[in-house]
Image 1 (cartoon, rainbow, N blue to C red):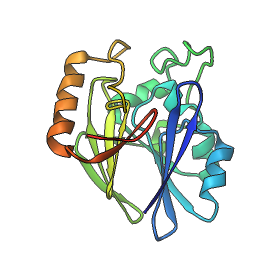
Image 2: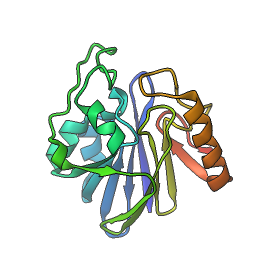
Image 3: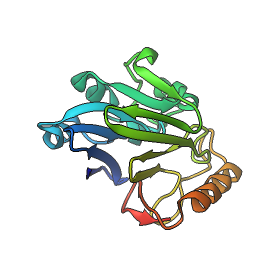
Length: 194
């Protein structure tokens, strides 16, 4: 298993490319320009993109990535509306109105505690509300991705639309109880240890 990180923008967003021995790869979040993703995925079969949540800085290049690789997206059902609403995904704040052009049918809508396979990858997703009401953490084989729930220096903001400080504290408690000592990869900045 190989993990490569593309860090972009003033918010230091991380897009992860996880590949296996079968020459398959998954994309976690879509913050990196398509050309950067293409450069890393040469010789690999891109299987899907999984979104930790639908804020603009994590979906900025989603359309281009899904269209180019002809792949499906995975997102929690509570986040799907945000893809199509610039006020909910906060793209309006960045003066870069972003409305997803991929139809809802191109997404697998996740529930809490989903377990499934994508190619030879074993994927588990967990609803970890707080930053948004549909934020998820993703476990792919031995890698754990926390999006903006758990960051290297703290946790994601809870004062934005659908955020909740109470939910965030519950989610962080759940992560500590279930992943203590595990390495994690967040939506911004360096990896850390739970």
